[in-house]
Amino acid sequence: MKRKYKTDSIKELLIDVAEFRDARNWKQFHNPKDLAISISLEAAELLEVFQWTGADTEADTEKKLAKIKEELADVLIYALLLGDNLDLDISEIIADKLDKNNQKYPAEKAYGKADKYTAYIEKTDEEKQE
Image (cartoon, rainbow, N blue to C red):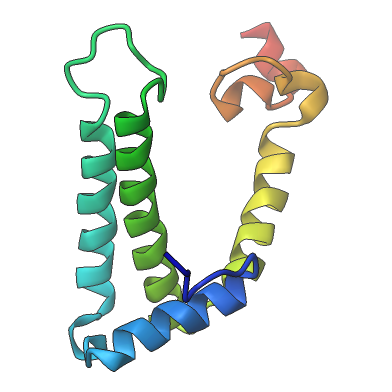
């Protein structure tokens, strides 16, 4: 099957997603609330892939991986549409969040650890005495 859509650029992906949406006149249904709900619902469907699998935490079968791809694509599509609806630059907001996370989780302190960011905050001398 020949693909109609194939790009690595977020802006080009958004154009493809918007063209798909607009060809069906669905923008009228894509308000921020409903897009946020859709992101959450699709994320729940992604979680469902791992539900009741015990210690199995891997994408270890073709069937499971196919379902993960499908649900992850849905989450990302709705996220792109929400960003578009709110006139947000996806690349910019991701870069901003990475900058914030870099401050909260300095690599030299957080490397290999899954601690909450509060574990990396420098305590004042007064706080250390408590």
